[in-house]
Image (cartoon, rainbow over all chains, first blue to last red; front, side, top):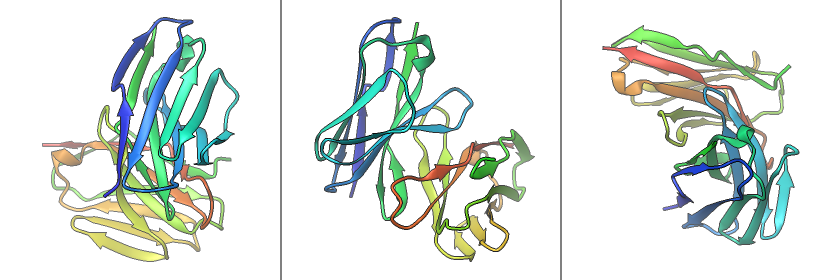
Length: 110
Length: 111
C-alpha cells in the first residue's frame, strides 16, 4: 500500500531563518505530488505541485520554493521565513483523481 | 465566486443525530467528488469518493451527488462524538492535475 511521510512533525523557527520540509512517498512510482498550507481555521491553499522529477508548478507568489530531486521526494524550502509562513503544511499525492495526504508539519514562525 | 462553496459552520449536533454536510460548485466539468475528514492537528483522510450522480453508501456515511444542481452532500447517520472533525469536500476533472477544495465544515457531536 502507499504511504506518505513528512518530517518534521513540528517546527518552531525564528523570522528570517531558512526552512526545509521533506515529503517522501512509498509504494508508488511517478506520483503527482503537492504541497498545501492550512492556516488556523482556514481551508487548504495549494502552494506547489509536481508531475515529475524537476517539474514544479507554483500556485501563489511567495518566498517559498519547492523541488523534486527524486521521483518520490518533494521538498519545500524558504531562504528567509516570514511570520505569515506559520501554518500547517501538508504534502499530498494524487492517483486517479483521489488525493491522499501526509500527517503534516506544524510550523510556527516567531 | 469560488469554484466550490462550503459552509464553514461550525455545526454542533447531539449524538445520534443525522448530519448533513453540503457543497455547491460552479464548474459543470467536475466529474470526481470526494469528502475528507480532518481531525485536529492531523492530515485530511479520504472518506468517500464518487464519480457519478446518485448515492454511495459506506457504513454510516452516504455521499450524494446531484450534477444537475451542482450540489454534493455527505450524510452521517447515528452520529458519534468520534465523528467530530472538519469535513472538506473536493472535486476534480478527469486528467486534471489539481483538486479543488471547499473551505471545510467544522462539526462537533455532543455526547
